Image (cartoon, rainbow, N blue to C red; front, side, top):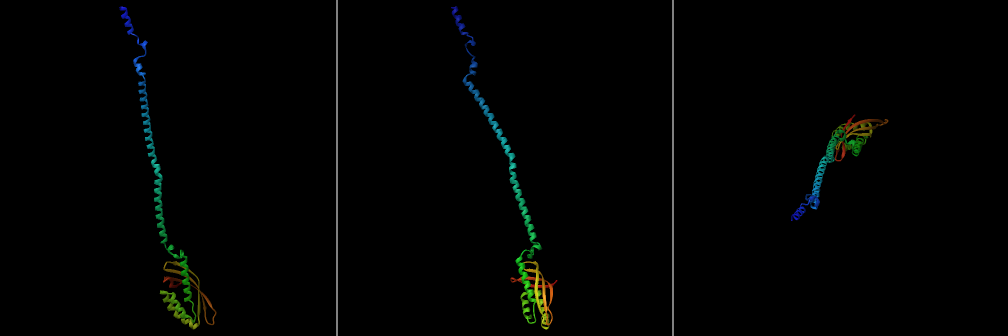
Length: 235
C-alpha cells in the first residue's frame, strides 16, 4: 500500500522542465499576441508618416507665402509703369499745347502752304493793279482800287491818287508795276503781314523809260472769302 501511494505522488510531482515550455512563454509566442504587436507597430509608423506629411505641407505653405511677393512684382511693376506712362503722356500733351500756342507755331505761314500761296497771290495781283495806270486809264485804276483796298489803305490811296491822276494826264505818264517777290511774315486765319518787292517802269512822253524798285509792308485781312489790303507802308 505505501509503495503505491509513493508512486502516485512521484507521478504527480513531475518537473516542469521535462514536460515542455513555460506557460508565460507559450502565451507570448501564441499567434494572437504576435498579431497585436505588429498592428501596434504599423499604427505607430502610420502616425509618424502622417506627422511627417503635415510638416512637409506646412513647409510648402511657408514656401508659397515666401514666393507670393516675387509673384506680385510683375503686377506691381506693371502698375507703376502704367502710371509713369500716363504722367509722361500728360506732360507731353501739356508741352505740345504750349508749343502750339507759341507765336512761332501760331504763324500759319510756317505750316499752311496753301493759305500762304493764296494770300501772296491776292496781294501781289492787287498791288499790280492799283500801281499801274496810264493817261487814259486812271478811272479804271481808281475803280480797281475800290475792289482790293479797304480801311486805312483805301483812304490813303484815294487821297494820293488825285495828284497821280493829274500828273499822269499832264505828263502823259504811264506807270507799270510788277511784283518781283512777296513774302508772308505772319499769317493767321483772318490777317496777314507781307513784305513785297516791286519793280516799276515809268514812261513819259518824249523821255526814255526809267525803272525803280520799291519795298512795301502790307497788311491784309480776309473778308468774304478773299484778301483785302487794309494798310500799306514803306520800309
